Image (cartoon, rainbow, N blue to C red; front, side):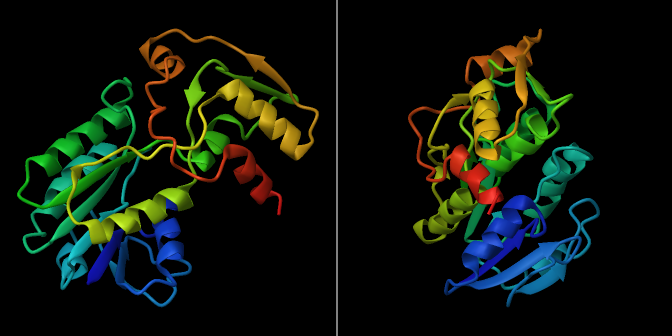
Amino acid sequence: MKILITGSTGMLGTALINQLTNLNFDVKLTSRRKPVTPGQFEWVYSDLLTGDGLEEAVKDVEVVIHAATSPLKKSRLIDVSGLERFLTKLEDIKHFIYPSIVGIEDIPFKYYKLKCEAEDLLKNSSIPYTIVRATQFHDFVDHLLLSKPLFKRYIIPGSIKFQSVDVGDFAKHLIELIEKGPQGRTDDFGGPEIMSLREMAKLKIHVNNVPNKIVSISLPGKLYKSLVNGKNTNKLRQVGKLTFEEYLSRKLE
């Protein structure tokens, strides 16, 4: 069985490479740039923006894990138009695994709306698929919201909640789905704990042993309210193993 990993230079793509290295799968990688450490795997160039290389990328492939995404720029062109273009090349694919995000229909954020559109494209195609939504990765929450204290203070919307999950745990789960075959929309994959951002900031201060303070602020708008209400979490699916505290401790090793 030949597996194609798209977005092989991204955070999830890199985690998938690490997880697959010692497993008995025939793996092909594709992205616009060659991964720094592709291991023993074949890599081919492809570009979702233009369609260049897609036919070569899917040649002889039976299963796709579609880790390619672009949350910050050209999101519609890559996550929606690019996916639509990609799906036209997949007539012989037996299983298309699509990682998505928990709560995207309830959170008024442009990128999440595009992920909903992408899910609909896949659902309305003739391709056998599995859609699995994950909560935010530990690294995402840490770098986006807790990476740069101002005058030794974390100024944060402290009431918002996260159920962050280790990207390696999620990558392992995606690989386990390969053998299960197409599941349609399957169960969410959430982190082991639901915490406020203020609690996460306290953990970072404790683990890093730094004298930073925390200043919590409230924000207006539907996006803030949706995160305060935990729309990005799923308390029934606390299945990830590595906690946020353990993630922070590993960074110090």
